[in-house]
Amino acid sequence: MSLPDFTALRTGRPDCPSDLTLDRLQAGELPRERAQEAERHIAGCADCGARMAERRAGFGAIEGVDPRVMLARIRTGLDRPASLSERLLGGFRRLFAPLAVVAAAAVAFVVVTREQVQQPSLDTRPKGSLALHVFRLAGDHAEEMVSGGAFAPRDRLRFTVDLPEEGYVTVLGIESSGALYTAWPLEPGTETRFAAGTGIELSGAVSLDAKPGRETFHLVHCPVKVGPPHCTSSGAGAAPVCPAGCESTPFLMEKGP
Image 1 (cartoon, one colour):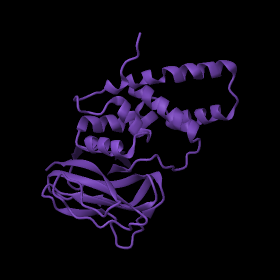
Image 2 (cartoon, rainbow, N blue to C red):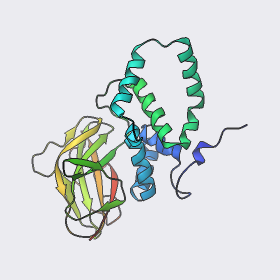
Image 3 (cartoon, rainbow, N blue to C red):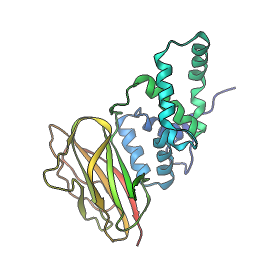
Image 4 (tube, rainbow, N blue to C red):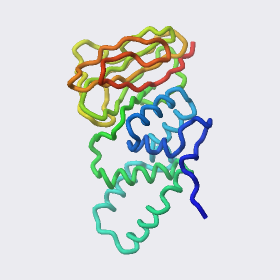
């Protein structure tokens, strides 16, 4: 019996990234060009945005599982020598791990387990791809939004970013008219240079205006040698034009009336 073609397993349209591609994107294993291509598709595809959000949620997406308890047990297991039976079981798990792509919860378990083996510390660490995470403030909590999701006027948003290397960042917004505005930083003099890492929180919150329509946030990252980004709009639905050496990643919003 031959194993299934994991690169063909996907939910959505034929042109949507496969489950395996999304798993590798979340794990930071895709080459930069492929990662950027996948991010661009996710920004314009609500189905794939939801699939990616499920992966980013990890253990948190599994009802009844406390991620802190699960990760603590993993770390405890890593600190003690494995028995012969555990080593044999680990070998079988590695052999059949690819079959986990058919279930999102199992994928989350495999990915987080492997990352804990390589990175047992919970410190912020780079994963090799640029990413913008948008959170909507609701009362005393915040919910992570999906690219392509619905937003309302006056929604208050906060950002966290994943950076592959040290550099300068800004978050630009492009309205449906093609007009460009700066969504972050909110105040002059704000520090915009950050070391490489994941889950870096950008200070402050932005409030959406009352204009309905499709808008796009673009996280722009420029290496230290290039300096802070200075970009111009190239029209609605297109990435901004920024200095050579900079890169950007989009996040799509559908703003209702």
